[in-house]
Amino acid sequence: MKIIFNIEPVEQARPRATKTWKGIRLYDPKKVSTYKKQLGMMCKFQYKDKPLTGPLIVSLKFYRQVQSSVSKKERELRLSGIHRPIVKPDTDNYIKSTLDGLNGLLWEDDAHIVKLVAEKYYSDHPRVEIEVEEVNEDGNT
Image (cartoon, rainbow, N blue to C red; front, top):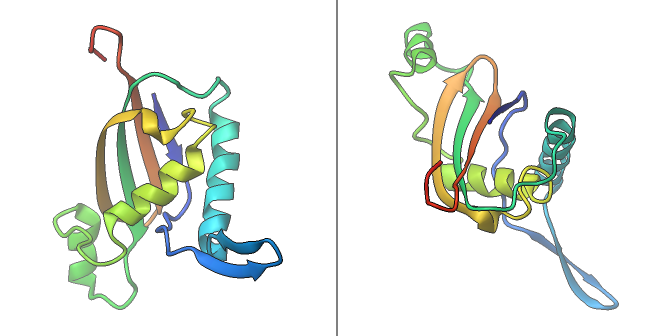
């Protein structure tokens, strides 16, 4: 199954903390929280089945906007895929925010993911593409 989320990927940031009368409460920064909520709403719209529960193989492609400060030549190299994003945010931070945002919606828990492939690209159309394969009892997809 393949799902495309037309949303700019957002990296997981360090949690924020606030002191309450019960103790300390940790929470996501607003940008991350908003991303996870939007991703969840898009998932509910595109995926109507129950969350997947077995072992899963997941492929993620994160497409981010090309910076406006680069030359036309560099822009073309980035859009063609010759030059890929090797700058922050790190791929693992994109992964964390995206997998967490889809917990309980696309899969029961991201602990069910037994294989993960993730890539970063540049694009004029920022988005997140996710492919999910279920692993059968015999270990085949």
